[in-house]
Image (cartoon, rainbow, N blue to C red; front, side, top):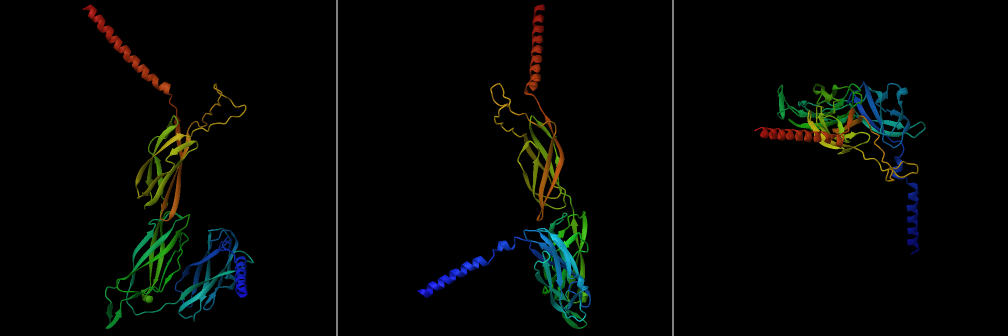
Length: 434
């Protein structure tokens, strides 16, 4: 019994000690936290005896600002830096969810063997902070195969179909082995028509577009007529102008003779949702039915389109008009009921003016003259949420008195009465003359 009690006491002690030692996972990510990605390797695979450019991306996925970020490249044979002084690069401060990139240049030894080698990238959130290390695999050289299958680009699908500045999305490329028979005879020798994709890299020569994928490598064999889809994550810079921008797909096939480079166009268009008044913007006695035409001027479909009006001192119904999906060039007409907001009932305070019944006098509306009206259009282009506003609209106010509006009615009835009386007197005189 004493032994059991001693064991239980020891277990309880260990549990208590572990609860004091281990830090909750949430505490571990409360500060800055850096995620490292190798977003570009050029050329890929690395070529023996030539220079290699690496683009390293660092992202702060933590909850706090990284005060002074450093990136260090730690190469091993067969890689070497162009200069040891370039092994460490300073990014500076990096706020949460912010991204920075740095380029490093390596030389591949002329005696390197074909295959896959690793390289280490270290990051530091500030001077004297501990280093964090991440390893990446880099392929060197390529194999030569006797297969005669040829890889061709069959289809390009972008999502969204047309990007807007600042958008993120995907580009899916369909590659197909164009061979139609399992074998082919060349010079009395039979060859198989399989196709190999030893590597596939999508890259951009400018800073307008950024491809976030590492290269695809060693994707196996494509038989005659077989297809494969490669999906790349693409991001468009915020300040890009409208136009068509090129991406380049570099494919390494069965051998050097089967390598190819393909131009992949990506369209950027900033046109958006237009909101145009279709009736005069006028409040009559503090109320109005406002009508607007909503048009999608973008080349592809927008999703979750909604329009929200705003004006000081006015209430709208509905508060937000949800339209849903809108095709290119589609026009949709919407209506809002607008009214002046009801004044707040004042509370009694000494010295306040009272009316004849002893109640506090209701404050008059402070709104006079035209009212500034703005409309905000919200919509999605693929996974990207956008907004644009129309803020130069003015809503005029018209007051129509009920008493003054009844005067023309009374005048009309009076005129009709006088006409009837005249006709009656005329007929009576005519009878007397007869």
